[in-house]
Length: 463
Image 1 (cartoon, one colour):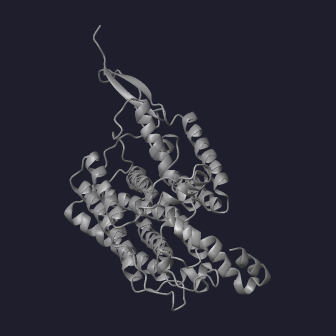
Image 2: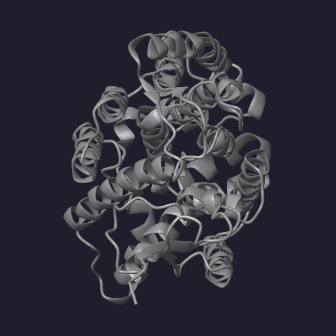
Image 3: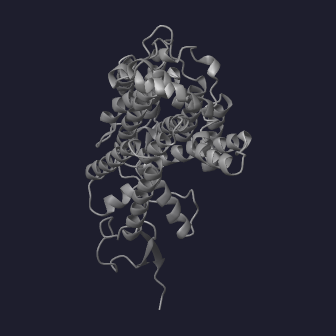
């Protein structure tokens, strides 16, 4: 190693890639658990140069074309199917904002666009460009199976209704497919790598691999269930969930391209899969959002909202498998808006002693409506917040991990305190006494109710 460093300093143009690979990348590959036997015998074939963003994106851009076109064409088709069979969302005058029936099944169109993009990717070559290292892209089939399970579960809920615990059971089942086919089973290894190094230096032992695998499995279940429910809870306004997910997908695509650029071609298939998943999700959502933006002509339903959450969860898990934990942290920052809304919802229900899965009208978008903002203004504000988190996640990439964690804690903590001060946690009960006809002056409307309040109506007792 010393000889390589000396030679690389003397002849940087000739030997620096080989020295860099032997000193930096090979230990990272071994720490990640990949087999060095699968790598070329000559490391310079892999790292002769770093890739540009154009070199990474250009082989896979056709995935975006197909995903967008298929979703854009099939969305009105699914709307016609939903209207013909009566699969529509009726307004209820309480939690739901829309005032007329709107068709469901938009999530099916998004899924068809996404899976079409993945299908076309199987005919593409990896971005390495060199014949010794280039091969056809391979997408782990468990990702498709898990997404299909989520879509069928959501469609079942749209048609007949599903118990919340049954939803969670289906989400756990979909996450189990990922783990069974070795997706995410080592996602905790990069997080424990610094700890293992210090334990080895101080005590001469490391955390067992079996324990790291168990922690990795728990992380995968938590991410899949959390993301599916986060996007599902956010789907409350026209264009809200789809537009926010499009911003998140663009951020994930940025991370995937940069991971492929700086990965040195050690695992071109994993780098390419992350880029393809980002392009497929972005194209499918953008093909659907024009029909879903206010006033919406079609809703995605639970089949679409939970599918978007599963897609984001898969990309977060694949980012966690990178050798450096900053990519995982950056993906969490980009997904912070749905996480924040879900965390506030569960905290509000816990504080007010209500069931965790009980429905309410106190989500972030509901409270913005109650504070006088229109549906379009609320959606655009949410888009702006999603963009803020996307840029914050991109900034994490250029920081050291210890500073990135501090940056994340400050942002998330500040938002929690702000939400608490705005009254988004504690519910205020307004008691109204029911009186005979003509005895109550004035009409109770949504604007006359204080934001984040619960209306309790009591009968007037006779004297």
